[in-house]
Amino acid sequence: MDTILSHMTVSVTELKRNYAGILKEADDSPVAVLNHNRPEAYLLPAAHYERLMAYLEDLEDAKVVRERAAGPFVEVSPDEL
Image (cartoon, rainbow, N blue to C red; front, top):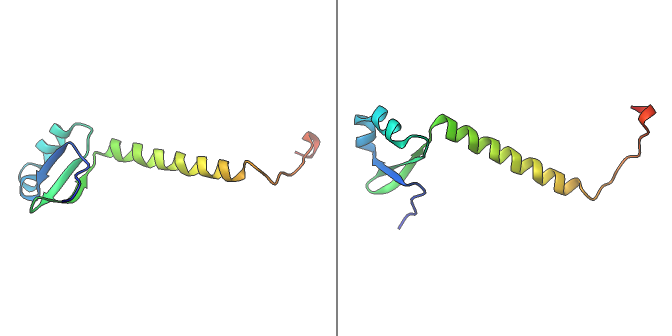
C-alpha cells in the first residue's frame, strides 16, 4: 500500500473536471492526485512550493555552516579588508 502524504486526495478525472474548485478547496495545502487509487502526483499551491524551496535552501546553508565550523580559518586583519 502506498503512503499518501496529503490530507486531501482527488482522482485524475476529478482534477480535470474541477481544477479551480479543487485548488480553492485545498487552500494552501498539497493535494494527492490518485490514479487507480494510487498516488500519481501531488498538486502544490505556488506559495506552498515556494516555502518548501526556501526551507530546502536553509537546510543546505545549515549543512555548509556545520561542515565549515571546524575550519580551516584564514587570519585577516581589518586593515587588509
